Structure formats: C-alpha cells, structure tokens
Image 1 (cartoon, rainbow, N blue to C red):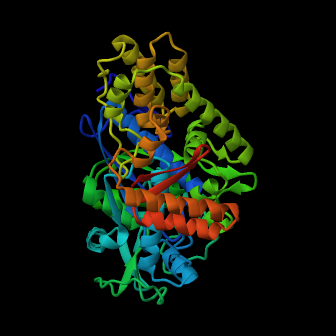
Image 2 (image 1 turned 180 degrees about the vertical axis):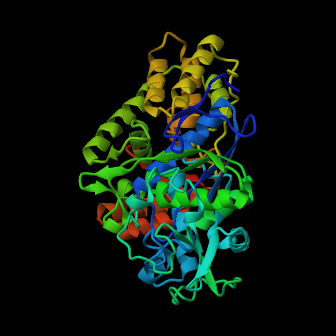
Image 3 (image 1 turned 90 degrees about the horizontal axis):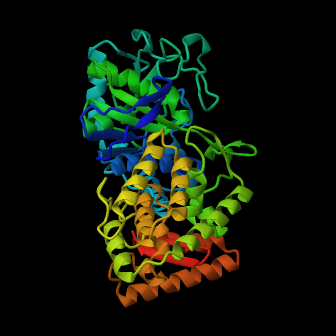
Length: 509
C-alpha cells in the first residue's frame, strides 16, 4: 500500500477529514444506484463517474474495496414526501410494458452507459425486489423497538424518537420543506411531518403492479428502507463510505441514517460522499424537466464518451458543473491532443506489450472490472525512482479530497518530465487505472482495440461491422431511432460500441 493519507470531505462532519476505515486495509463502500424507469442522464452519470474515481483511488493506493450498489425497481415515488406515483409504474405506463420489463431494459441501458464511460461495475448489484424479506425483518425490529408505527395501514418511521434526526442535512423541524426535490402533498397519516413510509399497503396506490404479503397486509416497501437493508445484507452493520448525489442528502440519506442506527443501536456509516449537480444554462439537469441528455445523445453528436468523462474530471466533484457544447468541444480538442501527444512517445513493442499486459490491452472495463497494478511496485523496464515519485504525487493529488484536476496536472507533468518514454508510458497507463480515459488507445492499433484483447471469430466481426455501417448510414440520414435500435441490439448481444473522432470502435462487454 502507498504511504498516502486519504482526506475526504465528509458531509456528516461538514469538513475534510482523514479517512480511516473500520478494518485496516479494507473498505466497505455503498453507492445509491439508479431508479430504472428511464435512461440515466449525464447529470446522473457525473455522480457515478466521481464515485468510480473514489473507488479506483482507494484501490490505486492499495485498499481492498468492496463496493455495493442497489437497483431501485420499486417504491421510489415521484416525490420525496411519500406521495405521487411510483416512478417504475409511471415508466411502465409510458411504454406500455410491465414494470419488470422496464426494470430490465433500463438496468441494461445503465450498465451499457457505465461501460461506455469506463465506470467499474460494482462488486455487488442488488435490485430492491430481490430483498423483500430483508425489508420486512428490519421494519419488524423498528416496530418492536418503538421507532415505527402503523397508521392508515402503512408503516411509518417516527422521527420524533431521534434527538439528532437532521445530523446529515443540518436542517431543523421548523425549516423542513416536505419535498426536497418536488412539490408534494402532505400525508395526513404521519404523526410528524418529517416521518417517512417504511411499508405501503392497499391504503395507497391500489394500482401498484408489484405487491408482497407482509405482517401489515399486501403492499410494497418505501424507497429509503432498501439502501439500509441492501448495505446490511452485503457489507454488514458497519459501513465505511456511503455515496450519492447532493439531492440524496435530504431526505433519503437522512432517513437511511435514522432507520439504520435505530435498528443497529450504534453509528452506522462514518463517511458520506456527495457529488454536486450538473447544470445547464436553465438550471439543474433532471428527467422531470424533460429534454435531458444521455450518453447516446452525445454520441449522436459524435462526442466520444471519454470526452464527457474528462469534462467531469476537470472539475471538483463538490462544485456545481455547468454543461455546454462549447465547453465539451474544448475538452474534445484537449483530449485529441493528449492522445496524439502520448502516441508520439517512442516505446519499443516489447516494452509496450509488457506494460499493456499489466493494465489490459484496450478498455479499462471488462464486465466493469479494472485490472489494477500493485501499488508501490514499478515495472522492471522503467526508471524506478521517477516512476515511484510520480505515482505517489498522483496518489497524493487524488487523496486530497479526490482532486481530479490536480491529478490530471500530474499526468501532463509526466509528459514534460525529464524521463525516458518507457517510464512515461508506464506512468500514463498506471494513472489511467483511476482516470479511465482510455489512454491505452494511444499504444495499441485499431485492430487490437476492436477485439478488446479477446479472440473474436470472423463471423461475429463481420456481423458487428455490418451493424456499425447500418448505424452510420442511419445517423447520416438523421434516423436516430434506427441508430439507437442498432446500438441497443448490439448491447443486447454484449457488444459495446464507442463513437470517437477517429471512427466507431467496438468491444465485448
């Protein structure tokens, strides 16, 4: 492990703190996953990119990280005040499909977007509908302990039983806005306006498609209970880091703390990591506003997904980031120049192959998994002192509250350094295990990139290349529906395509 102290801004303490895991050398990390009723927009994906960098930074330094993510496929209503329609049901109505069909389609779409953006797929991904027994068990314990009550045939958490319910959000009862993200109606079953639903029954939303038997009647879980239970199921009762967007702070993460610590009887999570909004000139990007941008919509405009990833990395995760195509064009030009500059490094094929064998030939993602080099150990073919010095400088930049822009500066410093090209190449590949900007493409041929390092039979290659040609023709004719359908067809067969300025490449997911 590198001798580097990690310092993170902790939303719970409202300050930057030294990170100390519960168990030395190991990290339990939980990520709030998507509600799979629609495509993820690029604002959602900014959060996942920065969480990905956090995880990879910890791995880079030498921590053994287990990351868990939920998939919300039931219980997330259109407002945070326990009113409105279940988002999954709304998605099913919109597309005239079943809720489970919607969930599968948009879960697959989310994973495809993650792969395109070189976001590592978490070690455990668990849908809410797979954990009903766990939800019921936790709710029963909360009722037995007196932290929950039944009213109007629903089960509610009683926030008045807690002395410090607002510890994460720093709000108070008098300032409480019932819906943090949406205008909502008051739920008259609640004893206190901050109380939240743990389990819904037939007294609400009788047209809900997904229902389960429970001690309180036929019904379904509230949104907040799922993360507490899925985290407990896979990471135990002590959690190191919990991640999400700033809009999750209240009420979602506030409620998770309330129910988890009431259930366990002790502090649950030590560090809370929140990513700020992606804005446009008209405000925060949101699905409810319509017209949101996806990875596919950027690709249709010929932007490489790596350009968007770099766009996010150039800003600090705790600052709002404003999106514009002019800004993205500037980043695209910078990315192209960076790749061209790396290509000019003079490295023998023998050394190049040695370096690539450590980090993987093409994409940073093989089913979301990233091959990581050993921290503090330089390849034999490089200048050991220079390599280890820059490796530590890069780690220290990221360890300073995930300062990705400073880390990118270290990358450019390597290119300007008084070092041989083999050492520079080794450091670039090492840094890219965290940055995940597909910098390997500068060291491999287009043929090697296409097959993702695997043997691909000629029949499959011919099929994929034919589909890519069909898609290019459809895009040229502005038939984006057909282009999207071809992309989705290939994704369904485990083929991820990437649009770059040098053409469309593909790889097996």
